[in-house]
Length: 60
Image 1 (cartoon, rainbow, N blue to C red):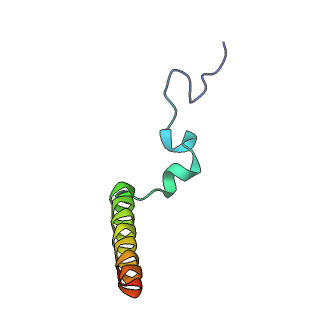
Image 2 (cartoon, rainbow, N blue to C red; image 1 turned 120 degrees about the horizontal axis):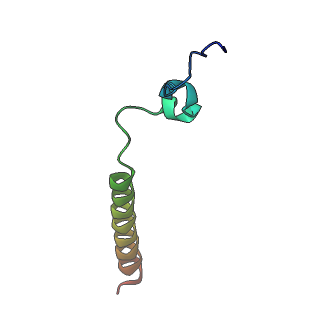
Image 3 (cartoon, helix red, strand yellow; image 1 turned 45 degrees about the vertical axis):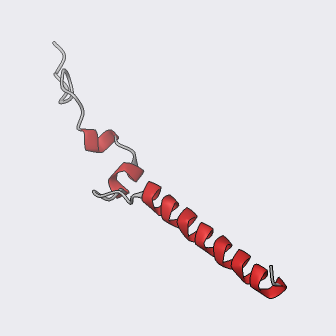
């Protein structure tokens, strides 16, 4: 008769088999979509202000 191993017929603990990066993640992820929209909005404002500055300098 063979001795039963502790993991026979049992699911392994998920923390032991999970990747290390999964443990390092925060519980509340950063909203990267909103960050991207904000950066694009700031870029459009910057382009608008640059265009108005160029138009002012050349008297358009």
